[in-house]
Length: 478
Image (cartoon, rainbow, N blue to C red):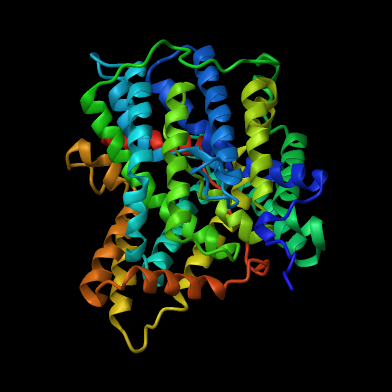
C-alpha cells in the first residue's frame, strides 16, 4: 500500500502562515542583501537615486533566484528551503573592477554575466566533489559557517561596525531583550507562535526602539511607491577578460560555500543532499548570478543566516522560502516597502543574530558528534586545524593584508579556507572513499538530525554593519 505522507520539505502550509514565516526569513536576510549594493554604489560614488535602484534590482534578483532554487525549474533548483542573496565574496573584486579607471560598473555586470554562464556549465564538475565531503569535513564547514557569522551578530548587538555610538548600553540592552524574548517564546510558545519566535522578537525590539526614539524612518518618506527593474539599466555590459577570470574565481568560492550550506540544510530538513541534488542547487548559483548581471545586480549564493532560522523554528517547508522569494520581488518593485524593512535597527537584529548563527554552529557540532574521534584520533587534527584556519579572517582581518590583492576572494573566505583544509587533511589522514560510500556516510549523519530541534536556538545574517564591516576588510585588498 502506497503512503501518501508528504515530506515536511514539500508541505504546503496555510497562506497566512506562509506569509508570516516568509516575512520572518526576509527580515533575517534583508540587511545582508542590501549591504552589497550599498557598498558597491558607495565605492563607485554613484548618486543616491542610482544606489537606491541597485538595492531594488538586488532585491528583485534575489527573489527570482530564490523562487527558482526552492520550486525548481527544469535542471535548476535544489528544492530545499533556501534563500538566495548577493555574496560578499565578490565585493572586493567588484570594487577593484568598478574603480579601475579603464573599467567601470558595466564591466562588473559583464563579468557577472560571464561568471554565471561558466558557473552553470561547471556545476556538474563541482558536484562530483561531494565524495570529498565525509561527515568530518561537512561538520567542520557547517561549524565554521556559524562561527564566522557570530562576528556579525555580536557587532549588530553593539549597534553595527562604524556606528559612532557603538556599544551604547541601550543597544546592548535591547539586543538582550530580543534574545530573551526569542528564548522565552521557544520555551513557552506552542505551534505556530513558537515557529515565528524570531519575527516576534524582532517586532517587539523594533517597537521598543521606536518608543525610545532609536528608529530612523527618514528613508521611508523619500522612497517612491513603485520602481521598475529594467534589464541593462546602466547600458549594455562590457566583457573584460581579466575581470571575467576574477569573477569566475569568485564563482568557485561561492560553489564551495554553497556546498556546505546545502549539506547543512539537507541535514536539518532530513533530506540529505546527493550529487544530483547538489548540482541542481549549484546551477542556480550560476543562473542567479547570470540573472543578477542582466538585472543590474551581482553574483548570488545561498544565504547562511537563514539556515539557522530553519533549526530554530523547525519549519522545513521549502514553500516558506518560496514565499520569501515573492516578498523580495515585491520589495524590489515597491521601494517604500523596502525602506520600512530597512529601518529595523542593527541592534534589534543583533539578539536574533547571536541565537541564529549559534544554531548553525550547533548543527555543525551535531554532525561532528557522529565522527569517530576515539579510534581515529587523526580526525581531531582535521577539525582542530581546519576550524583554526577558517576563523583567521574573522579573528584577524588584516592577517593576509601583505599578500597579493588578487588572492583576496580566496583568503577572506573563512568557509573556503576551512573547507579546503578539511578536504586536504582528510585525504592525507583518511584517504577518500568511493562516491557511494561518501554519500551513505553523509546520509547516516543527516538521518540522526531531528529538524524539530527547537531546543537549540536561532540564526540570522549581515546588515548595515556588514556594509561597514566589509568596507573595513577588503579595503586592504585593494
